[in-house]
Length: 342
Image 1: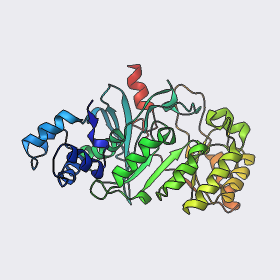
Image 2: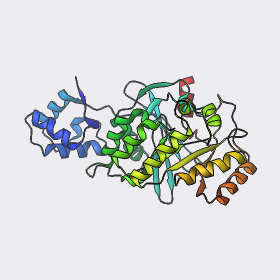
Image 3: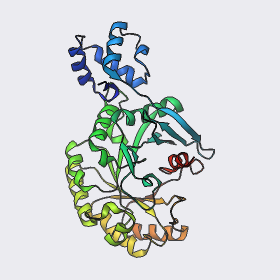
Image 4: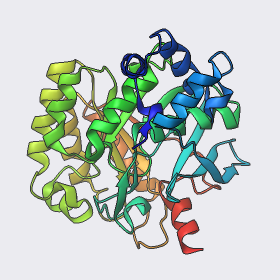
């Protein structure tokens, strides 16, 4: 059975080459070719044909194909829909800021978490992405767009902590100095709150930014819109956030989609402020993106302004996420959903 060579670290390649009777220094050459986006072993021009033939008999690489590419006329945001080896598709978004270019990648095909405002979860989970597939989202977004990627957010389709081992391997690959060498402090991982994985992540001590998709500060509201809260609860989530902060020293960010009449009252704002202060969290408010299949609407500008004032009066550090790519289905899951319908 052929092995996924793009998911391998240099030291693993060395072991494989030793098994094949080849010198270990070839591992660095191969890893660098893979990190540059080689689509075929025959592109590896500084490696002998005999070794390339050996590699073909032992390993595979399935690079993604662009199914759709949309470029925003408003701000240049690029939305990709990639076709994977099995015909499934995932979305990736490239966004440009003053500090550099950020890529938002998917970690699963579909999602099992069932959040009531997210297009990614419609249809459930199909499968988890391999480390190589996540790496290719970053690499090929950079190669196709011509924009050097300096920051990564795992906030696309899927729940990263539900694909824990593959995501951890991806992070090692994309951070490797012989590869893309993107620093951990330039990477954010977003979770809906799978608390059973927080301690595992903290032990890795990767110095990335953990973003918790909170979206409601109380169990009654959160359980209605986020099934992942059931059986865990906000108090348990806060305890996990505290332990993560104490272990890593890294401030957590609370992602909070503002939903009209659901989670945008003064009560919610005051409780959110308390939660944020208790765990030293930053709050990032998100104007809700419209999803055709759901009836939820974004909070009005007036509600948003009042909500922000409560947080600021309570001494909470709060920002409002800048909306990018609104004309190219830049919200998670929408482009994939449209292609599925077609």
